[in-house]
Image 1 (spheres, helix red, strand yellow):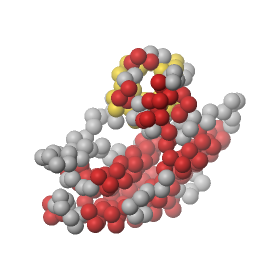
Image 2: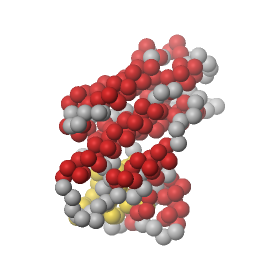
Image 3: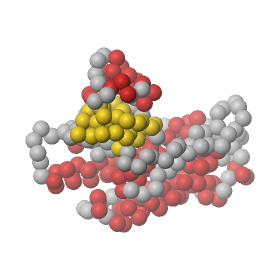
Image 4: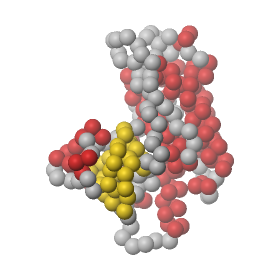
Length: 258
């Protein structure tokens, strides 16, 4: 299964509304951009989950996957997720999307439908292609969950190929008061979410002399005062940062990769 070109789509759609404005705008302008961003995330999910159930169901029929040990929720997980995403796409047309209770409820149902499958992918060695396709789907679901403040899917480490299988371990809880976002360079921060997670691009830009920043899900860019506090391992990663903020300047105390 081949996913759509996420980088091209993300840059084309996100760039129109993530670039900071030079002058203050009415709050409705920000609301429109935020609504468009949510709709963009849902569009990604709708596209990426179209063929995913077929690939997932085929993978369950072949070793090393042991379908007999999976829960019924895990076995039907991809199909259930696809059905809930289709409903989520319909709900995303609401004009009051940011405060729409029906959309938030449907998002919670969508994540709940994905949870058993997410757990199975963290416990059994599914094909690498399935894991690769699942990672951006889970990330996008968690991006929406972060916006609407509903429970996130655990990020689980799949068993290593060719070795002894191990149970996936959920990442640590986000510290209280932490700011979540992506560690990117200043130029990539203005180019849409596909660039926020482009590790090689961030590395190259930093080598060329660009500074790293923290960009939130809503596209707000925070300048990092203590650059030495940012390790290269966090480039292009979603992180939770604690520290002191003054305007758009962030002094990092702790950083946790999510």
